Structures are given as structure tokens and as C-alpha cells.
Length: 443
Image (cartoon, rainbow, N blue to C red):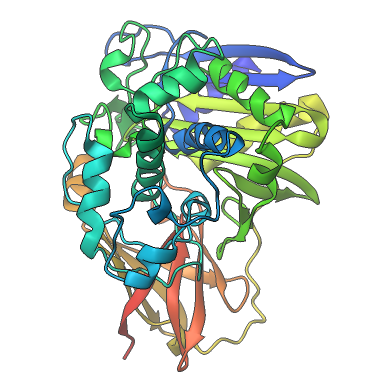
């Protein structure tokens, strides 16, 4: 296995991977590659990686402790705990609940400005969204919230416990579980053990150190936990043990418009996958140069985690995890669907611009084929040496789902949902779990 992972790291231009397997109650782990390409320091099983949005699973577990204590209810309005809570839509402000936030169905735009780096960062974020508009109606569809939703949950916990979210996480999870390699604050990381994040422009050049070594504190509850594979699996044991509100965590689900890339449903802090009829739970995350993947197979008490200081690359994850799953005699990850050439679609129904602040997609029909153009963030494009706009072909799988083959050898095939037709045209585009409303009709 070590030699296979080493070969795949070179193939994908990823400096290192740390992998842990939980099986029959026991954890085994290994590390391959280097923690930093500039120093050549080897990655070890004690190396600490950034978990990105896998943090949301940790935050969910802490929040559910408040539920188990009877101090908060999942379906009680947020305003019960934060009396001044407001957004632009007064009805949403009065009705949005913790369950909406945990499942990413609140529809509140991530319009909170720069809340700074102080201990009041989540209080500031909640105050700043008083005029935040709706991306979609409350509970109408799934649309991933990178930072805001879990910042609101963190603020509820802060008000109830009277301490900063970071301390709540340490007191309720990290310390009780004996996690010596896990923290939520960049300045608390043991930097002698920390992996350096890397990006890549070409395989010939190889990976280079990311210019953004950690995310701002505003991402804390949704993206700032750093950990090791062993610590992540220690946390995963809490889920597999199934006590308290864990059954609710696993069974409270909403459908995901694009079911193919990650999974068809979203639970509380976890993605729900269907692997050839078996339910598998997932938690993924990325920062600017690091990546985390966790898969939990509850019916066999198995979990696999992989932390890398490069990527993310879906192809790399699939090859590594499928090799491990096959060795364990487990079901492997389903392939993406294949296009259906028999579909006869009215392409004009999909055309238009789908946009959120900082992200813009334009879908248009050209010579009888559907194409999607993505406008990249200028800084992102400059760092990676990419053009400002990249165009992909969309290959239909169904009347609402498409494959998006890569336009670059360093990319993997992605999936896209274009759906909810009103007056003959689609209202939403959903990809990478994010939802984008139609803002300009096609011509």
C-alpha cells in the first residue's frame, strides 16, 4: 500500500498523505511523502494537517451535546437563543432553525463583510447579516454554506456556554477525547509538527508552497480544525458508538440536487453516500493547499481518513480509498454516471448566468452542445497561472444532471445539476455542493 500511495502522490503532484483506518475498534495509520517540499522533512503519523470543512462535523458533535443537555432544540428558531438575530427577509429571520443551518438549507447569503480575527468574530458575523439577502427561500433547496451557517451555530454555543467557540471545542471534544494533535486556532498549532500546504500549476513544475498558509478565523466553526488521521478517527468513534443525538445526526437528511459528486443527501454535519446500496457517511474539507477526506461505513464499524498537503484531487482519493476498501473486503466507491446520448434536451432551458458573490457561471448552447464558462477569482487565477475564464462542455446524464469533463490535466471530471424550471428556464445551478441562482436569462 505504501508504494502505491507513493506512486500516486508523484502522479498527482501531492507532497504527502497521512492515512488512518478504523477497523474492529482499532486504528492503524501511516504517512507517505514530505511535509514541506522546500525542506524535504518527511511526513509522519504525528504530522498535523488542516481539515478544512471537515471541521463542520466536529462543530456538529459539539452542538449536539447542547441538544443532549436540553439547552437547545434543533427545530427551535435561532432567534430563541440569539434574540437580535435578523436577516433581510424578516420571515426567515424569525423561522430559521439550527437544523436548517446544519443541513445547509437556510438560503442566507454569506454577506458578512470582514469580521476580523478577535474573539468576537462570530458575534460580529451574526450582527453583520442583518441585511443579508436570500439565495433561495428557507428550506427550499440544499446550498452549501462555507462559513456563515456554522458561525451562527458557534455563536449560539458561545451565548449558552459563555466562552469562545474555540474554548468550547477544546473543553467538550479535544480534551475529553485526549486529542493531542487537534486544535481550532492557528496560533495554537504545534508548527514543528504542521504540514505545509501546497498548490500546483503543472506536473513538470511540481507542487509549490501555498501563499495562504491558513484560513481567516471567520471560517473557524466551518473550516479551521487541524488534526491528525488518528485524532480524526478517535472523533469518528463517537459517531460509530451512536450515543445521544448521533442517530438524529445520521437520519435527519435533505436531498442534494447534484447527487453524484459527493452523495444524494446531507445529514447533520455529514454527507450521505450510496455505495451500491450501502449507506456511507462522508466528511470532506479543503483549505488553500491542504485536503481531508473521511468515509464512515457504519454497518461494518469501519472508517478511513486521508489528510494531504496538496490537492484536492478526486481521482487520487478514489484510487487510494478503493485500494484500501478492496483490501478490507469492503464495497468500493461507485463510478460517476455516463452520459446518455439518447437524451434530446431543449438546451435553451438551461442557458443563462448563475451567480453568487465571487462566483459566476454562464451556460450557453453552442452548435447544439451545452457549455459552462466559469469566471475565476483573479487572485486564484494568477496564483495558479490560469486564464480568467474557463469553458467546459456539459454532457447530459439526465434532464437535470450533467458531467463536466476537465479542461486541464490537473482537474478531474465534475458533476453539475441545473434544475427547478420556472417559465421554461432553470432557476438554479448546483455544483461542488454550492447553489447559484439564475440572474440573467439566456437569449
